[in-house]
Length: 167
Image (cartoon, rainbow, N blue to C red; front, side):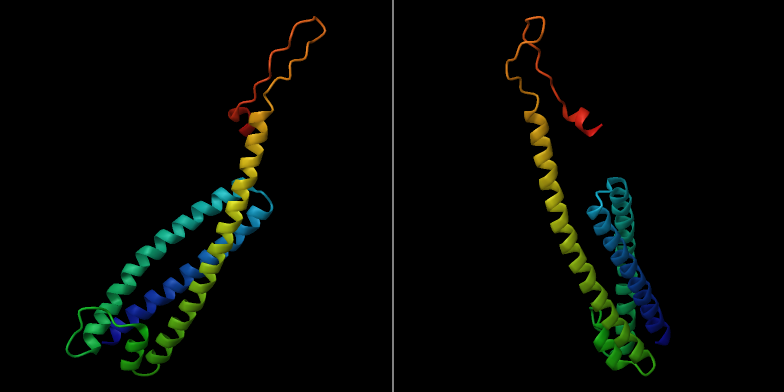
């Protein structure tokens, strides 16, 4: 019984660390947006994806450990994993305290990550709006107003392509 709870505690501690790392990456991502550092933003987006993949894999471990602990602590065994609060109520100290503390810490960091995600989404929308304005200006700048050059010939319109603007 204690081994299943230890596996659950380990999985929760790992998840807490993953979530903290994700929050740090999201804060750095917002800073990169502020400074218009696109290469750093791309690197942070890749790091964010790796962390999300790790969190997803760890969630499977945590759910399996929670189900195993639920089946060992409750009689008759339940088909679904019990919540951390229910498991803590059925466990003895100091395991109970660890479970309650980890559950609260995970809840807090999840709220922080959710808030940072909202802020990053709003900043991304603003950046996309700015880029759209820039690209529309580039697209309109290729229009010729019909002036003649020194040789008396009408100049050819300068065409700006999106590829040139990105380079």
